[in-house]
Image (cartoon, rainbow, N blue to C red; front, side, top):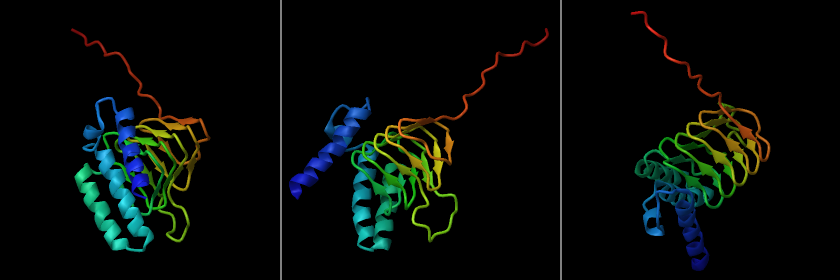
Length: 181
């Protein structure tokens, strides 16, 4: 039991060192907001499963305050080795499901569309090895397949197939207008 827990914690630290080039060691990774967010979520999720909803929410709120705004609802199911780069403004809803080795950048929202509370799943499901770029918004009970990617600024409301991608339109860059002298 303790060996399995230690192995899991080391795996979470290793993924931060692996995916964030500014982090050079496990010791530095302990200070990364992603580690605190994932660790806090694991504890809050266990409390949630034991129906200690208020305590789970309180812990989730505390973690959000300490991580600069990473909000993972205690009911969300999160796979192994989740990495949240920069983290500020990340929101993961109650019925979201994340596979293993998912990477999220800052200001990602995995949210609902305001659908009825009685539905089983209101939030996105992400497969294994999914990458979601900065400020992307994924809404509703959509699925993003294994190995797919979602680009920065994308608004995704339909399924993304395995290995596929969803991209926002690029900015249009125009030359400066010349002023008459």
